[in-house]
Image 1 (tube, rainbow, N blue to C red):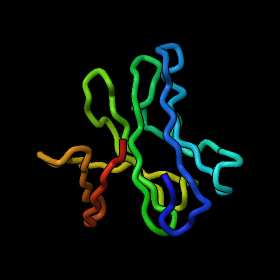
Image 2 (tube, one colour; image 1 turned 120 degrees about the horizontal axis):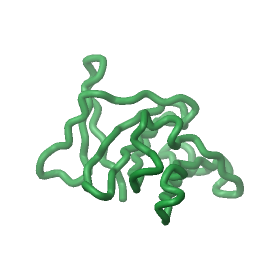
Image 3 (cartoon, one colour; image 1 turned 90 degrees about the horizontal axis):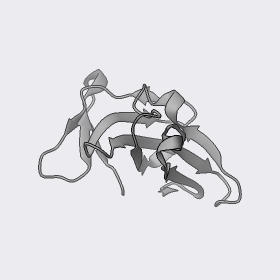
Image 4 (cartoon, rainbow, N blue to C red; image 1 turned 90 degrees about the vertical axis):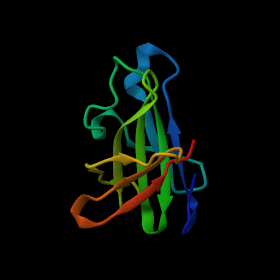
Length: 124
């Protein structure tokens, strides 16, 4: 997925294919159209939602100015177990609380942390 303001910046969500490596699920960023990649989100930033005991996939949404949201989905229950936001291309992350999945809208979440409503369409 590309940053809407920077065509050279790409994001990739990589899910672990086997139970033995579940905790390696992560988001990577490239600032040179894919020539090199750096991990910016993984188990360490996931507030316990990415772990060896359960397989997860990551859904990502990007916005202007380096904004990126990551939704962690537990495959066993098919539910979003965490939503995280970065306003600086993944350098730092905020766990979004008050997560509400909007009924009737596939992979759309809202968060009202800090009195601001944010809506995210998490891509497959």
